[in-house]
Length: 94
Image (cartoon, rainbow, N blue to C red; front, side, top):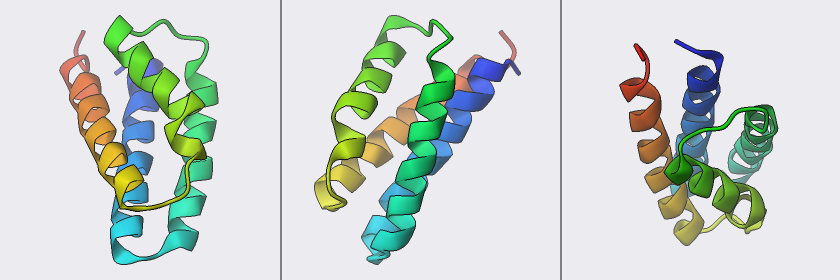
């Protein structure tokens, strides 16, 4: 597993945690995982992922993670978490 895949997988996990915390109504936990997600995004800046992954990372950094925690944000976080997890797992042996 490359460091890039590890970072993307970690970001995916935190996005899932944002979604599940929001669904449970635990906004404090969602805020904490939001901060952690931003740290993973900063770490990913030195890599050049595929174009569609770059678009997801750009949307997360410039839009989604700055929104308030609500169900719409939770749904998008869950969608992006799944896409990023699939990318990381697909490329685990690449």
